[in-house]
Length: 446
Image (tube, rainbow, N blue to C red; front, top):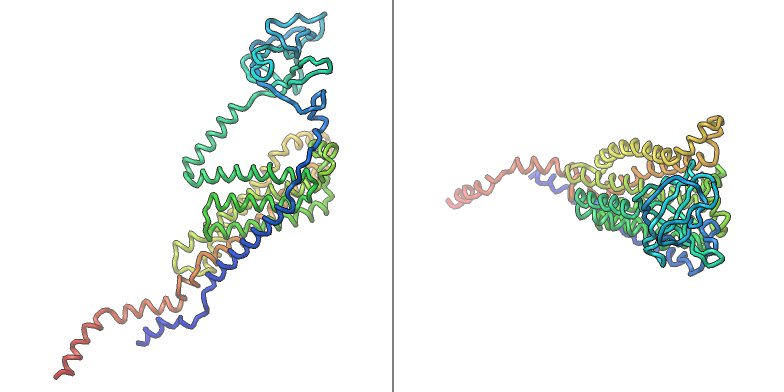
């Protein structure tokens, strides 16, 4: 009887925190979701016509039109043919006079109003010039000169088919290995791309503030991608809340870091073009938006891993307390932080290799190189991402540990004391008790 009393001693313990924590997490995610929808409505870009920047215009001031073509012959000869860039059906006219030599390529035009005809592309050999070979598919710029004559020029190599093959193999491998979840992750990528192209870029072009736009776009992407790829459950919800909080931290850190370091972004040519031709877009805001969106991938990776680790530990050991789950998952998280931080830094360094190569031959001191705008941007980007990454691990792990043990410490409806005393109680009073009852009743009958 004594042990039996201990077995029920947990009835006076406080209500388990798990269900309350789950309601709090779901409530927070619902509130954040409503705020994101309201932000998207408020920041939704207006329908406006943006003039095409000068570097992307044709000679007539319009958008660049490209057509498909295939190189059918190529040689080195004198430049100056009257057929260069013109449309013809037979052979090109010979060059006028003896000029310098060019790489001459006859290209069959395969799309557009002049499909089935040919044109001649003359390219002076030299550094940075394309090396066109017979049989290669290319893209040709089609434009009309002031006299109404159609002109063609080389634009780029046609990469549609090779890219489609590479992307197709990527999608196939993901679906084979991750199966249905991998397919849903690919759909999430499409959603993320649609959010960036359909909302974020037009909103920035509309002159909306960069930080709210990036936070709203990032939140929409996270809600769609995480729940779609990993399912609607507490595990995903804990990772989502940790990622959203870490993204907000990354936004605040990015703003502070850019203001402290006075980064301009004008060391990058594309930013200079944006400032010159799209003046309603803030370059600093563009940097901030890039920092925030760029941190999503690594944050998502870490938070999902931590949430999965916490739930798996709780599932494998039903007697583990929340503190033990948190400690075990944090050991996984520390390894993940250590590996992801240098992965993050090396990824940015790899993207800046051409720039670093130029600096290495410029004869400048290492201090000047590191504190210059171009390299400082990557240093700040890596540092901000690393800080947000490190803070996301304990935050997500704590949330997941609370949700992974819904019934209190050490089990669904028990405490460590109740568990340790209830088991001996069962062994001290086995099934023979009902067998002795008839003997007692028999003696009373006599």
